[in-house]
Length: 208
Image 1: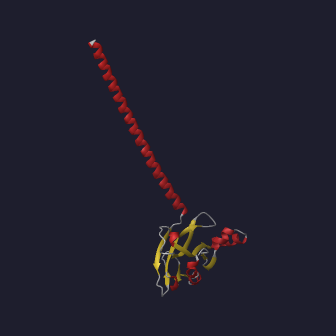
Image 2: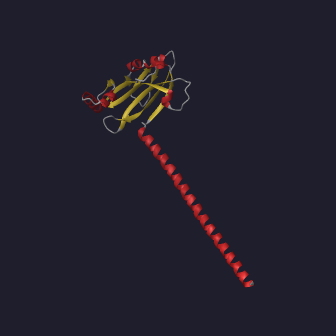
Image 3: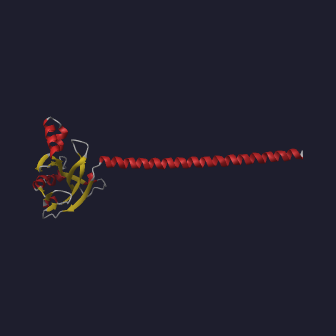
């Protein structure tokens, strides 16, 4: 009887050790599975972020934004070492900003056409980090190669509306390049007076 009890106790202890071992093994596998899942999640999120950044870089023209505080009583000149022209800003324009960069050519897939866009601030009561929410585009100057311009003119005459819109209005040219301007057509009534100054601005266009 005593031997039977002793055997039962040993068997119980063995079962307990086996259960504890199984529990520890299961715990190790569970921790490993959780770690693998966590790493997969982290790498996936990094991949998504990198993809989003890559997409933004592909779809957004390389550009820099510069703010200029023009004096309300005197003219101010837009002059940038990266640009081969200058523009005079009327004193009535007040505070203005400009953005320069390169956009895709309408005649091929190259990111080669330089543009310069002039903006004015909207209401200061707006609370936003979005550049388009805070500013109003009034004028864009774009530079094409002579070959591009010829293609745009021919395409526009044949009814290619995209070419007609991209071509804008020619303001100056050399043997190698053509500069055009496009005025914004979505100016709100509260800014119409300043938007109308686009004509005066483009009249001051001068190649360096």
